[in-house]
Every structure is written in structure tokens, then in C-alpha cells.
Image 1 (cartoon, rainbow, N blue to C red):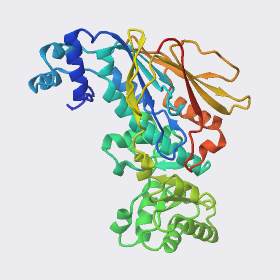
Image 2 (image 1 turned 90 degrees about the vertical axis):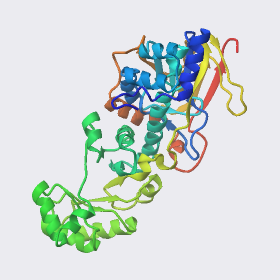
Image 3 (image 1 turned 30 degrees about the vertical axis):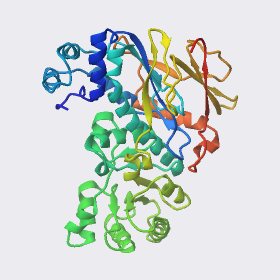
Image 4 (image 1 turned 45 degrees about the vertical axis):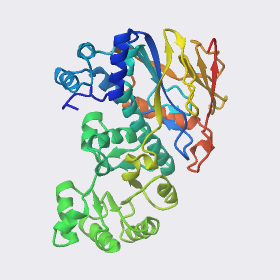
Length: 432
């Protein structure tokens, strides 16, 4: 991909189809594509829609620049007719979907892309690469937030991911409820609060631990976090309080048996007259490790590798399928990969208490039969190639996810393997 151009986030086979469709006249047929997951990752009970805001930014700038078109033509990827079409490309269709921060389940039509076949199919790789990544990170992060039981989490996995994936992961984690990130690029781009402390290298740089702590406090003030496990944790805590005093913001423990060390550290801090100093723990934490520390005196968790890799599920498993051509539903009948044709309408049904009980997906019916407690799930994002005016902010999406998680049955929040928290019922109305 050429610098600054997202357009070659396009797969070779997409351009093969466009070339053939332009030649036979089918490229301009009105088409509807749908993004959904056939199943959730093993052990997961819900998915989280994330990345929509990033995707809309990329879509607005999605063009094929002259040097890219020349590259494709020179390599024989496209013919002259397709090259001319790419040179003039601008998405002019519609895009609808579940709000960012919404929950999804197998079969949920989380995004619908409408337009000509060619202008929609060329977006497949862009759409799936963004949504598969961000949805996976947000789902893992949401499980960690639930496991933390209200204690704040810092996303600190930038060194375990591609440089751009690290920024996207920080955004998805914040969407899911993380309090802050150590990734400054994410802070700059998305306004996410940033946080961090010194590494072991800073302590090792100095002649002794006290000198390192004194330098950090002199530069940042006592409202900083000192890393106390470079040598001996107990002595590290004593040195931290001796240097910074009881007004120190926090100490961080990054290794060892965190359950035992957190309890011992809390007792020692209290003994030293520093009951308000918080304890931050990090070191390969995932949702299970965080849940195991629920009874310990931990104030803040730092999660890195697990969150930026989806905690074992690095992709959401989303697919992008053609479901309608010129108003006629089309279906794929391959074994284990069958689709349901037609544009979908989806809404979620709730008990009077607000608990979600079912997701209803209707094919080929514009207005679903409403019942008390029903909530429509799709909303417009793009009309005629232009972004709609009332798009939610990242803060809006973060609040929306928080509200959605409250609605699912309590067993849906368990970390153990189980069925999806909400059953999806798909009904076809009209001819198949």
C-alpha cells in the first residue's frame, strides 16, 4: 500500500470480479451485502460491534490514486476498462448497521452495504479487516472490564501488536470500558486518557533504586506510579515511600504471584503509614487472571498482550456476503456456509425488567411488528456516499456498550463457555 492511501486495502480477487462484471454488464446491478458472524469464538457468549467510527473515516477517504491504478495496470491485475473505473471510484451507496458498542450474536446483520455490485464488493477487505480486528479486541476487553468489577484498567499492549493495530486496539479497549491507554497516538487521535510509568530499564539505569525513584518523583511529582519489583518488592515499597512519602499515587507490581504480592504489599503500605497509595498490577493479565484477583487489594489492572490479541480470539469471524441483487434475494447453499437471502431488519426483544430475551431478524420486511420493549438495532451511517449528520462519538459508543451489557442475562457475562447470551431468530418473509 502506498503511504497515506487506504484504497489498496483491496484484495486481488475483488478486482478480478469487478473486471469481469464490468465486461459483462453486471457491475452496475443494485446489490446488498451483509456483514455477520456465523458463530462466536469458542467460549464467548456475545460479540461487541467496534471499529465503525474508524471504518467510516477510512471509507470517506477511500480512493484509488493514479500511482496505485498504474501499479495495478502494469502488473496486469486490471484491464484498461477497470483501471478507468477505479480512477473515478467513490462510494455512492448506503451503509447501515448496528451502532458501535452494540452487542451481536450469530446471525446478527451488523452491517448492510447497498449500491452497485462493483462499488460494494471492492469494500469487502476494508470492511472486514477493520471490523474483524476491532470487534475481537472490544469483546475481549469487555470481558476484562466485567472481571475487574469496577476497578479501572489500563491498556498497555502496544509493544505486542502492529503499530497501527496497537492504536486501533487502544480505541477498541477504551470503547469496551478501559479507563486509559499507554498508547500516546491513540490519545492524540481519539482523545483517550493516557497513563503510564517507568520501566525496569529506568531503575537499572541508576546506581540504586532510591536514586531512580527520586529522579522520577522530581520530574513528575508524587502523583506518579513507581515500579517496585525490579529487585525486591518489599524493599522497593519501602524505598518508594521513603522517597515519595505517603502522598505517592501508586506502586506497580509487574511479576510474581500477584495474588500473594498484592496482599503483602497492601499490608506493608498500611504499616508504613501509606493507606492511600494504590496498587497497580500488570504482567500477562487476561480476563481469567483479573477475575482470580477479585478478592485481592488491587486498585488498577494493566492489560497488554491479551487485550491486543483478543485474548485468544484475534478475529471476530465476520463475513461479508451478497444477499440481494436488483431487489431479489440471493443465497449461498454451500454446506455449513449457507446464507439467508434478502435485506434484513433486526430488533432485540426485552422483558419489562429490561433483560434481553431474543433477537429477531426479518428478511425482506422493512418494518418489524413492534412489541413493548423491542429495540431496533440498525441505524443509517452513510446515504448516497455521504456520512449522515448525527453519528455517535466514541464516548457515546462507550456509554452504549455499558448500557447493552446491563441488558443481557447474568449468565451471559460468565467467563465459562456457554451458549450465546441471546438467541437470534431469523424469519424470511416473502419468496426465497
